[in-house]
Length: 185
Image (cartoon, rainbow, N blue to C red):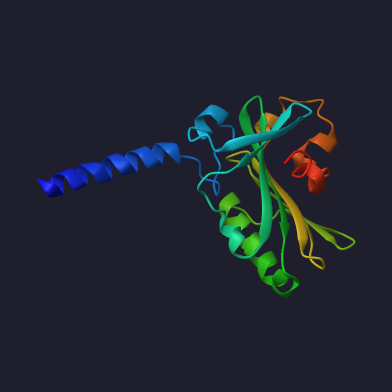
């Protein structure tokens, strides 16, 4: 009888935690409604600009890249739907090459393709990926000498909902990035 109660308790506990912690920060459900993703109440709004709402996720999920880089992560929503995951990251200079290789490997695996574009602009490198099946784009702008970077995963179909959006407000252009997290946080 005791084993039966323990089994029932474990099953109920697993079901409750699955519902509450449904958001996976490593594989966000782009295009999903905020209400669906925020069942546990872990998204905290900190800014709104140009029709985009920005949130921090404070829940129990740890991005895998935290093992090699320090980062600040925000999520952008258009019309209450997840549009982008935006990241400001810093790396120790001693492991920059390791981080570069890890980022390219992990993003390529997650997106399902190799980078389709790699450009250099001074000390900055721009990498871009595109997954046509899921309409996901990823841009990484990184200064390998300083160990600083900016990146954004974004869901292309939601961009069309704001056709007049200025570049400085759109996470996909990585323009306003360094100040983005510290304005109201």
